[in-house]
Image (cartoon, rainbow, N blue to C red; front, side, top):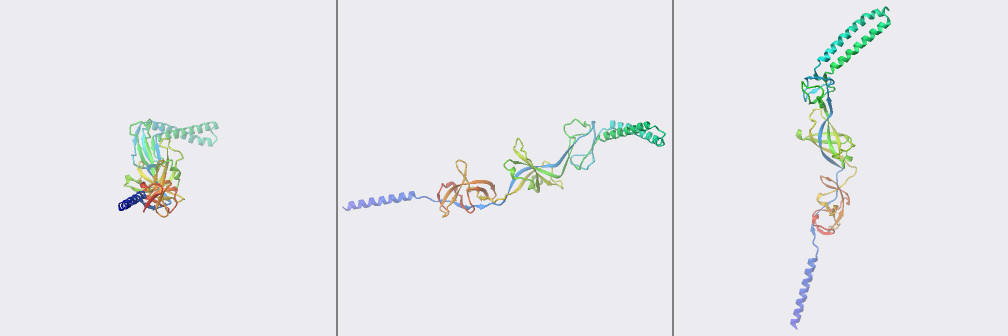
Length: 342
């Protein structure tokens, strides 16, 4: 009898231990996580691009007459004034023509002056006087034309500027090359040209301020204003050209220099922001976060719409409210409604 009682007690103890083990094995384990609150982003942010310095005005100069280039009076980099002589061609033919027309003009003028007094006295027929006036005007016109052609042998600067290129040498033909013999540039004011993607061009408007640094000048900082936004995209790159105007009174900025451009933007609405690590993506590529329950014990999956990256995190455009607590680290170990520990 005692043996039967002992056996029953052993079986009861074993069954109790089995139930305890089953309870422990079924108990849910809490995942250790780090949380953060949904905060507000700053009301402004920046767009960054690579830009190139361009002259505000480029003026290709050409000779207005045929002939051989005789002399060049300006070199690349020279600062020239309006009307300054830059180059000249052989003018011997034009000079001879001018001298002939000058002699004819002086002859006609002398005859005109001598017969004018006779005409004034009424001793010269009117028809003769008209012929004299006509001859005088013809000689004067021929002189002016020949002088104009003689002046065309000289290339002069139409405006103040710098000699940017020189594509001709003495002895070459003045006309025949596809390149402009001399090219002037104006760089008292320069443009910074940037290419903006189509998804960002709507955020850039005239009058916005921009800052840029130039690596060729040891990273020196400059500032300017957006003055031109192209309405048409480049057919190959599908980008839009934006030009920033910058004062360059010291001539530090030179065409062709590469720079890093920052355009500051402002928004009327304030965005919400969360840490980068808080954002996960499901198999369909949709973004989501884990929101911590009010008692701090569970994390629930919540789909969100994200925006731009910021220094403090990433924008959340929808799906969350200000002040909500989300999981910022440890998301990869969680499923929907997981038990968590802070």
